Image (cartoon, rainbow, N blue to C red; front, side):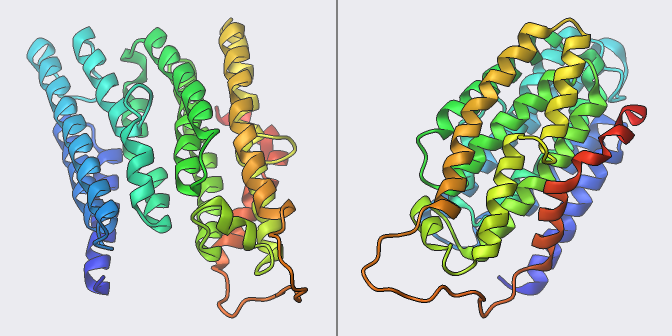
Length: 346
């Protein structure tokens, strides 16, 4: 792709996100979401492969439907209350329509079907954008409207997302699809707490984006698109693969790594809200995710491909690894000790 075109699309992405997260008016928020959708489409379809074109078409149709529902919800609310302010969403019908629209934007169950397919048709860097940056504007809208939304509906969708995200990721061999189902599962954790402590949702999203970025950039360095390629990447970059194993365990939420922090705080908050059964169910469902993260970690570091000739391990690669990988991986592993600083903030 032409560097100037890429620059225009990247600036448009930043602009769309900034407009949505800083607006108080529904029409401005909708405009930002539309700019974002239009900016990411050329990046998804830039390879001109049929799978990429298909992914871009699916993404466009789903996002257009979701944006229409956002506009419909805000207009219904304005019709009943005379308010276009995002935080003044008081009409129950508007709240229900908005919940549906944001669930479609984010890929929450039962509107999750498009996400693994779109991610599979995109390249790894674009997949990273779809999993992190493109979810930030809808998450902020969910954050701003959280007092008006139905908590029971959100908890039900969250538990279903955690269940299906874990369950459907078990049998996958493509790394992008595994990360898509991982994203759906993590969204369940974010959604379950949004009505009770919205700041925890944002904290969970930031840490999830950090860990996912580390995994995507590592896989991009080793060009591992499926498990069989991941098995052979150990000989090329042993140190990077060892770090990938730890980052995946952090994404699974194992202590003493960063990924344990949001899960710990969410379970604590749910228990305070007398929702111990929901906390128990979502904790057990995260074990499904742990299985496929362990499978990825096993393929990345413990399995060596069968070979007949003895060969020296290649301890360095010609192309230097992106320095961001080192920073993101370090943060993905080492942020748990800062947890005493968090309760005063939230």
